[in-house]
Amino acid sequence: MTFAKLIGVVFFAGMFVILAACGGKIHYPNYYVLNLPPAAPQPGQSRLLQSSAAVRQFSAPRFLGDGPIVYRQSPEQLGFYNYDRWAVDPRSAVTGAFAQVLESRGIFQSVRLFDGRATPDYLVTGTINHLEEIDQDHQVLMSVSISAQLTNVKTGDVAWSGVSSQTTSLKGHAVSDLVAGMSQSADQAITNLVSSMQGRLVQLQASASKGIKEAGQR
Image (cartoon, rainbow, N blue to C red; front, side):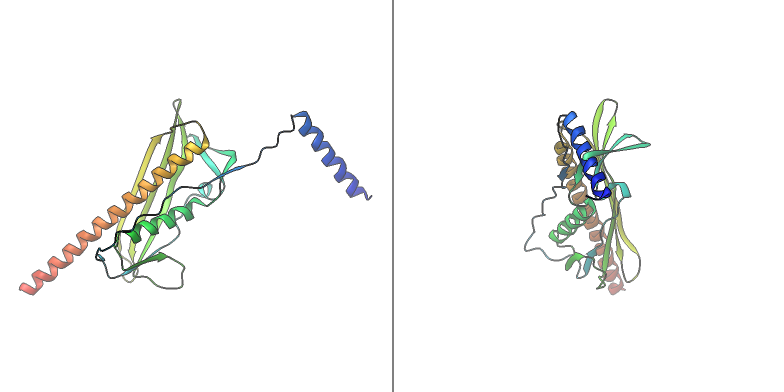
C-alpha cells in the first residue's frame, strides 16, 4: 500500500470514528421547488395584439439563485439554510410561469421563452427582487417581490413596467411551509403583473383607436 493510500485509509477511519462518536447521524439536503401551477387557458377570446412576445429569463440577486434557501436575520444580514436547497433555480420557475400566464390571457398572438435566435415584437424582462424568509420581532415573514417590464423591440420604448410585492406571515414551522407560502405569493405576484400589463395595453390600444378615429373625422 502506498503512503498516499495509507493516509487516505487513516483519514476515512478517523471520520467514521467521529461520526460514530456523534451518533452516526449523516445529514442529507432537502430539495424544494416553487409550486407555480400552469395557468388555465381562456379559449374563444380574440388576441389583443397581433404581435409576438418573448420572455427572457428573469434575473435575481446572486444569493437568490440556485442554491440554499435564504433567510434574512436583519436588513443587513443574510443567512442560508444548510440542508434546504432549491432543486430548480427560482429564476427559471418564475420565468416559465410568467410566460404561461401571459399566453393564457391571449394578449399576444404568440408567447415563447426568449432564446436569442428570433426577434419578437415585444420582449418581457424581469427580476426577482425578494424571495426569502424574514425574521423580525419574534415573527417569521415571507418576502416575495417581482418586477417586470415590456419593451417594444422595434422602437426600444418601454410599453409597460410594474412591480408586485407581498410580505406575509409564515403559516407552519417547517421549511416546506415556507416554500409553500413563497409559491403562493410568487404565483399571485405573477398574476398581478400580467393583469397590470394587460390593463396598460388595453389603454394604449384604446388611445390608438381613438386617435385613428379622430384623424379620420378631420
